[in-house]
Length: 529
Image (cartoon, rainbow, N blue to C red; front, side, top):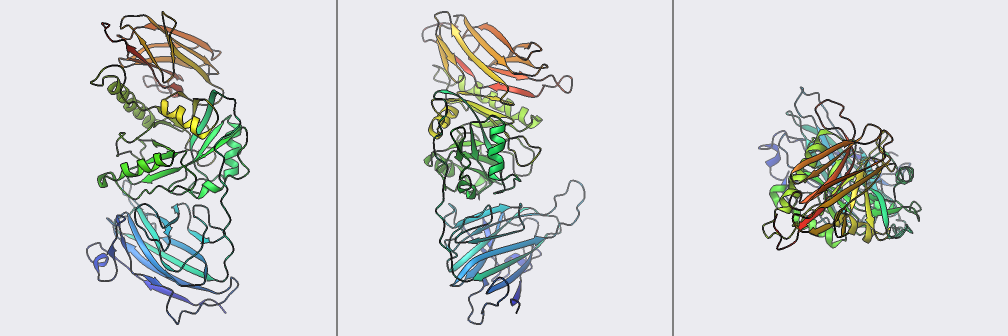
């Protein structure tokens, strides 16, 4: 006997008519609207039987108009005795003229604890990466969290990413499977420390995607690719979900530290939560105009993590960062293969450095944001570890690696083949390395030294200060060389180094091979410049 199926239709063709009809939609606290409830709880709703055991199915059809809210919630009444909550969905993708947005509909799930901001009821998110998912006490589709299917009102979150002018027709099918529940497995999370090499330079990639969001690699494949790329640490950073935090069992080791985090993917930009406590979910359902980002940035820090705006000038819809940098701990200026939007991010970051060294109180730089680089690898041919952030840390541990990133003791490189040594020394033998500060008389000579190994034959070095680029020189064809330059704190408030490939287009900057965070040169009090 096949399962009985019932179709519930809720078609809304315009925001000002269908979406305001009595009983169809109601306002919610999470920047969205709620559809009419789908009920499985009526007395006559006895589950049908079939190959999958007793189950009950409902299908909901509707149309979201252009201008629909960011999040539309479909409530589902769940009765007692449900072992599995399963969802599949489809939506129309009509052709649109060039330059006109088509349809794209993301999806996620909240349980009976509700949809309030903060994510107490969060059970998973797959965005547009999947057309179906399920959760049960002992397992869940990647992107979703296993756990009991308790009775109450659950919510399917529909998120119209873009909507064509004629609207977005959708169909959502919900199946509840009844029966006994299996015990929920205890999650196993990565340890906070690997053996490492003591105080050393460690290479990492903090922006990676697996099958737990829109990536195609499994966690095992990412771990293997990280080792092949010569990385010492990685960060789990799936879009809007923590489901991968428990997916790394057996994949870490003495040679590989695995941090847990999230790519908080809002409609006004993406931000990496790097190295948060395992299982900590950070909500994403707000825009810059809502003035809520600071609250969630503080949540990331309370969970031990760093707040790192990702690809701040990326051109994809919703990717451009609009929350400002006041709540950031670092900024991703290099994302994957070098592109013009990375060049814009670099220029913005450098402008922020200039602002920091011109702080009103004097006495050296004010608060400054270190630069990081990550691959944002999703699938082949994306290269894990291109680029990578190379961090000076006291140990290969979560705490020490994050402290190194936060302090700017790091440089960015296109691969593990390329290494840098960079610092500044004054005439009295005092030295400062990357992210450090050298205090000297304003007119005291300071020698800046960069040593490069493993660069390509076409690379050149550029030294940049708060006055702009002041030295450019080619490296030897061997890709290894030393560049020294003399300056004073009066002439350069900071110095940073770039290693660039030859320009692909004459007159334009070449792609990066490496980039350092700055060394600051502070004029000692009482000296003249």
